[in-house]
Length: 153
Length: 153
Image 1 (cartoon, rainbow over the protein chains, first blue to last red):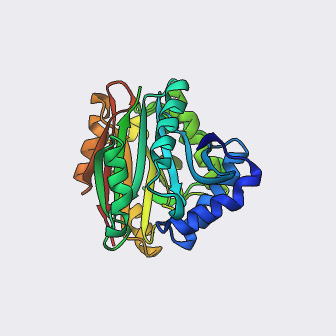
Image 2 (image 1 turned 30 degrees about the vertical axis):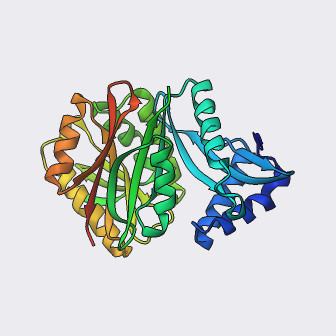
């Protein structure tokens, strides 16, 4: 398991991870890939986990504007076939290190309250994130926004 | 009091409103004006209140990506010399009408938990917003993010 930055040649691996991980709609995959493009152009940081020569997990994060040290974790995704091997945990540790190195002190994550996002929410809880709040029906009727944060500084 | 869209010739009035309203740092004024520019190019909606021929209040709002009907109210500002005349209330009513017309159903606002933002938070509470949650220390140590939402659909 190698942690490194995502490069232009990894985009197809990222697409496969996003599609197979099962958490994202086609529209969400499209937006995630747009943000990978923007990240490759310097707008976001894109740490990735390589397993056997292919990228099987990645994250997209960026500094929150007008804050002294808050970062948004916009996307984090582990390929379905490579879940349960600790890639998410390794990536999360790397993300926290990135934020600390940039003199940041906290991470904010927005996710869905839908039952099929249970696994994602359990991941954040296990990684030490706290629920900051909920916006009922944010994504659509019955699909709440749940905001998490973690102090890492 | 006339409610209309902001135009390119109103930018200096907006700058004056942002500076005098007392809520924003120089950096925040800079970002707000960048978003006015982006709004004039179609990225955001910019309803404004004109009093005696000059813009004395404005707001900046936009649809939240990946949601069915949620809108972010990014900025709302009333010139210091024109506060207490109902301009904020008129603007808020117009904002809600904009969201409903676009088949949106809720507004989300992010603001600061600092004591000098008391007036802003009281405005949102009086306008019917509910606190969704708080991210402690989001802006900087001792300066929390407070997230409000209001169902308008």
